[in-house]
Amino acid sequence: MLEDTIAAIATPLGEGGLAVVRLSGPQALAVAERCFAPVGKTSRKPTDAPTHTLHYGRIVRNGRVVDEVLCAVMRAPRTYTREDTVEITCHGGLLAAKGVLDAVLESGARLAEPGEFTKRAFLNGRLDLAQAEAVADLIHARTELALAAAHEQLAGKLSRRVNQLRDDLLHVLAHVEAHIDFPEEDIEPDTREQLERRLERGIAFMDELLRTANEGRILRRGIRAAIVGRPNAGKSSLLNQLLGHDRAIVSPIPGTTRDTIEETANIRGLPIVFVDTAGLREARDPIEAEGIRRSHESVARAELILHVLDASEPLSEEDEKFLADFAAKKRILVRNKTDLPPRWDAEALRARFDGNAPPVVNVSCLTGEGLEALKDAIKQLVWSGEIRAEMLEVMINSRHQDALRRGREATLRSLEALRGGLHLELVALDLRLAVNAVGEVVGKTYTEDLLDAIFSQFCIGK
Image (cartoon, rainbow, N blue to C red; front, top):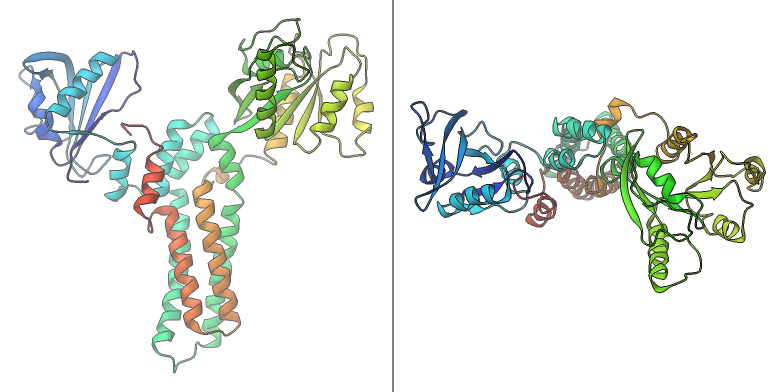
């Protein structure tokens, strides 16, 4: 694969001021030269150009000028992929960028697969696997905290600590295998104690990393929060207030929302995917019935419920039913319309839960009062404690979590076998499994299927 020269549009498709077509591979300069015509005394052909220089010219296809461009020439190894690389900056727009890409492909390149540029950076040793995943996290970050966490991982903060863990496990494995080769020599008590302590530290460190998995998942994927309640309680108004703009239609007529609406908002640095649902009631027509069915699906998938209650009207049978139905869910009771004369008391509602009451927040979607307190309540329920800078350095994802769990289990078995005086080959067997599992995090151990699964999630051009 690395013998091919690949090309792709590296900027989002659509209209814009500029677009970039990227080439990488052993023939990147030669391919670019077949379709790039330099203009002016200082512009050079790509094969003649010094590294990291920019040249003005035109892309020519079948004798016809496709576009005026700037051609950046970057020679290996000081490139993103550690291969010869050319980046052609043309005018934005679907036709202009596609025309340049077609000219490049006809000149000898092939279209890149999703994530193939970053995959080559990994295979050529510029990035490890955890850093490569951070590139995707960087692109998809929806809050500043998520962006900061991706930058820390891309900088290698997680990789350095995982590599140190792997080195410690390898150190123990080397000692064990040395004694397997010379069975007549027992491990000295002091040495055995040191090896056990090293394994204990490794297990403790893996436990520390595994505790960050939930926070890492929240920053990368967000939390789904379903806004539910009976019709006309103010669900759509609440969504609009949380988003800061009018996204859902607001009407005093019950049943206005016929379908679920999803939007992501930055709540105290956390990406929260709010889902406005159709009012949960008996449907009046087939369209409303479908909306209510989708609402029930959204509630089932939601990790947080914002149950909107109308403070200006007595609690209805529907309200009581929803209070019981959502009891097993993590939830916040949003007491809306507090700008109107109240018909029921929040403290009386809290008292009904026997000391296990969910947060009750008073808001007015008309005036915006109470919205900041609601945002604080959401953050406190989703993420306990402060968000510290050092936490962002080592937040693992679900793939890391799976690998570290397997590594921890194998390390624990090795430690127990060592303490129990079992045959050293059993200790070594589990240690090898632990080393391989930990190595998966940074790509010291990988399979083609694993790489395909990771890089297929990238966009083409990255």
